[in-house]
Length: 183
Image (cartoon, rainbow, N blue to C red):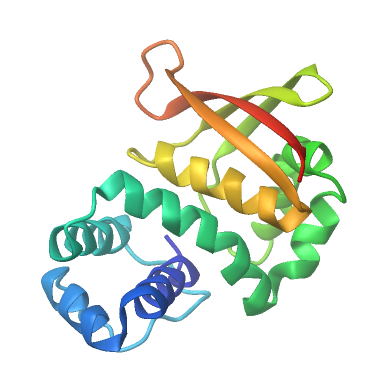
């Protein structure tokens, strides 16, 4: 994953638990980098190790950490200067969900080693979608739940996400039912 993801994980821990806790988690995760470079690709294991070390040190389920981190990612990416990309993806929650693949294609022009997930969104009714997430990275289903909730905050709506499970027994393909409504 790119350094931007790891920077966000670091910021998420520091904002929630303080710099000293980050230092402990960083050491337990065996992270040797003093600082992450946003545009540099790092082994996925670094991010997974950070989540695992945070889970162990804080006594919080790794899935809960991933969900919180996913929700935080939306805010972080906007502050880090990527708000324009989020704006280009859509002015409404449904438009945004339907444009996720296009947004990632645009991002891949700058992040040349990007291995983006892919998405499929099917409208069931005016406030309900069936949503698919496909990736070559395992274990991120709860991160996606957090991302969807973070997008709800961005659009000023309530979002309920139900992870329905894997698609066709594929480990890294997940199906969700998303219901949303105005606050």
